[in-house]
Amino acid sequence: MDQQTLIILATMVALIALIVAVIAAIRITMHRRRVQRLEQRRDDQVHYAFIINPSKPTAATTRARIKEYCANKGLTEVMFIDTQLDKDGRACAKEALSRGADVVIAVGGDGTVRTVASALGGTGHAMGIIPIGTGNLFARNMGIPLDDVEAALTIAVSHGSHRVDVGRLRILDDPDEDHAHAFLIIAGVGFDAVMIDDTDPKLKRNISWLAYFISGAKHLFAPKYHASITIKGADGEAYTQRDTEFRTFMAGNCGQIPVFSLMPDASFNDGLLDFEMIDTNGGLIGWANLFGDVVHQTITGKASQSPLSTHSHIDQMQGVQAEVMLDKPVPAQVDGDMLPETRHILFSVDREALLVRVPLDDGISATTQIPPIKAPLAKD
Image 1 (cartoon, rainbow, N blue to C red):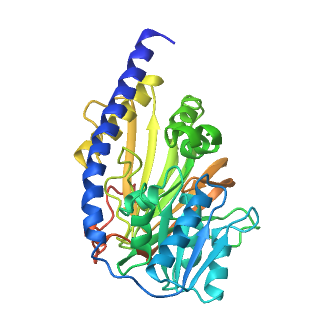
Image 2: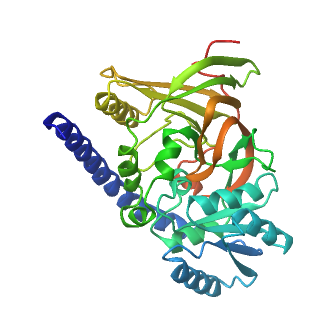
Image 3: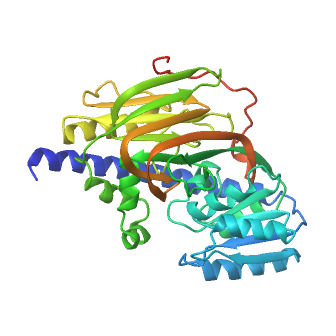
């Protein structure tokens, strides 16, 4: 590894460390305010079902804390259902509803939250979240505390809900697919899916989301992908770009990932998906430019590239649907869960289909009007 490469990598690590430190300080302040607000919330005496991922290291202790909390609060209509290898959160949530649950609470990481939401979308039943995973991206975007089980429980079992959109990814070239896969954060094909698929589970448990960076470094110089992409805007017009080249194509419902803002304009309740197509050239310089772009839009809060970028490209646009036809099968993912390789994908969104219990005082507000499509591709 040459000196220039080492300098670039060291600079990137230093920036990440600085951003993490600032965020940690902000979280301490927010925690103090959160405790004061939650003391004023009112319990909701209904039938609760807790869907627990028992594979998480803290699952057993979290279950015990939930039981103790419910006993202290006088919540008696409570059931626990564990996910299994052949029974995901979607199946567990359906079982919970069939057994009379009013509110279903996902206790796990983004995979558990996603699959539970897949079953609850459109039913009118509220979903609570007790995050005990490594990424917990949806909980982060919704302002649900990650390191305070009691605070998360208070939010989940008390009045205060918000409607959010549910993204859907349907694999069109697999006859065995019987439903569209729900996502609440980001779904995609290409580099992001390869990076997730190749992440070491043990490393992820030890260093959390930073494990993705190590996995991604292995695939920086992998071949690019080619596809024809058609995006349908909020106005019903379709825009197509044929035989386009990219590193990754993503559809986002929420745009905040740990430390960074990947899609600053993404809103979880605007009835739109934010589509992002990323490409780089020039080897490591291109990836360094892309990192600078992400840092730039994280700081500015705007979906725009850094004026210093010369070897990276980010196309960001909004719409209600996107159809992607690739020239060969590629990996795909939804909220970090891998799907079968596919050539033909349809992204869509169910507006405000899911009711989630959230800390409403943390600035989460409703959007009543869908804005027009932004940065359209060439009209077909």
